Length: 481
Ligand code: ADP
Ligand code: MG
Image (cartoon, rainbow, N blue to C red; front, side):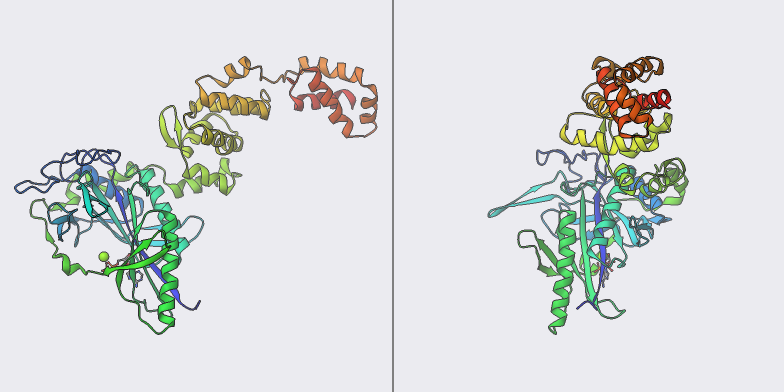
């Protein structure tokens, strides 16, 4: 069976983050829970209304295109994709057919050298949302007309795992660019997987799987479909080109309908919208868009593997690059926060560890708490580095700092967590300990290393836990050698 090679191509839809819808000024608010409030005659498809293009949405798609190294179209237009369905108020969807905004481009699956190449990225409007309840259906038109980006990959993916790893990286890119929140649970990111298997270099017949609502179901549905197709072929059957659904309860794909082809949609250019010469419109200039790009996920991964950062583990880097965290200034990428923390400290690794393990650990249990101003986090790291805080004390200070606004110094002082590192002050303690424990001192001089630990322990006791043990160790060595 293993001689069958699976081939997968993905179609990814992402709802774009814009203030208003694609062709009207109804609000684009994915969090609106009341049905049919963000609607107007245009997105309801009333006769006699005219669509007006949302330039912000066009810019979003072009930005993605620039980020993935795609080619921006010189000329573009919108087309009508005609079909009759209750969630399509106009009887057609405004989409792009012949002239997508972007062609080509690619993305490498993180941690591999496998490059996923793209056919096209285009812009269209979302359909309304249907809810089926018992013997009737309800339709919410809030979603109708929300700008929707569609990315089509080439058939170059060869495993379910790669399909998911790629889709996650693309989701991350959309979030970095701020063009989409891309939450799958909220339907802001939707995936369709085209799957075929073949023993030869020629592709087999593909099926298209829809209704995939999580990365887990994407992976399972593709794996299931590969197995199913191999089974069909092995038993002498043929794979039928069709659209299949994913049944979450039964964990299997099922036939929905035979696939329509593009001529069924009777595409034709949308007469109510202008055709665009993109190269002549300054706000769509690639140079301008390029300048607006943030540091991208793969660039950050590379950065953290070089010069001052080297030594950060791959796991730590992935957490920095993939996590969004609440801060006093709203949600930000952890890596961005880390950059601000390390602007004024050279303790790259210490800062990364405190952020990715301690701080995230605390925040996971306290959803109301936020990261403090980055400068304060820097101060905390410096205090640990200078021995003013033990690692235990630093964790206590950190927890308080995430709960309320105060500098680490204030907190440490107030809570009595400051470690004493002043050699003059600690020398008195060390001398007292040596005097009180002559046997241990003699043993250490005779070469018994364990006695040093004992002496340090006594010093900690005498200082009521406030001494910096590293400084004590140094002082004992000085006194006794
Ligand atoms: P259609 O005309 O049926 O929509 P397209 O050529 O537009 O097909 O491709 C749609 C998606 O299917 C793309 O992501 C493409 O990479 C993928 N695809 C095309 N042929 C195959 C195949 N034989 N196996 C798997 N995926 C395929
Ligand atoms: Mg197609």
